[in-house]
Length: 120
Picture 1: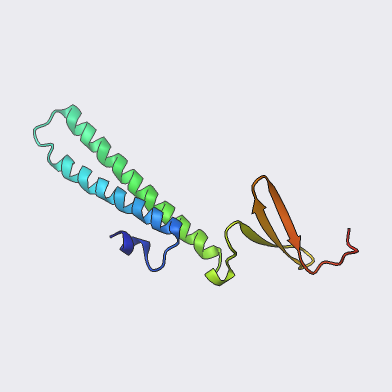
Picture 2: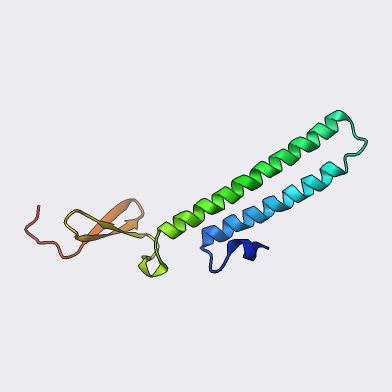
């Protein structure tokens, strides 16, 4: 079921969130089944079962929303061919020069390509 929820070629974050959706779905199914078995329980026990059911449903809906958000963000990031290696990002400035940022421990180093040496 996890693969079905994750979809074709999911990102690692999508895969992780799909697992969370499936886990929450199992919790909802369990709490629904447990609530139907309450039968002759006290009012306090029935109320507890209903609260568990509501909580499980809320977590499930939240997990689905988080997966939708991750998919939207992954889609907005562009195609994999535009991707840079981990720890790097690409920025564009007003002069259309491309700047590639390299993230290192404790510092950020910018490598600027095709910039006139006379620029301040």
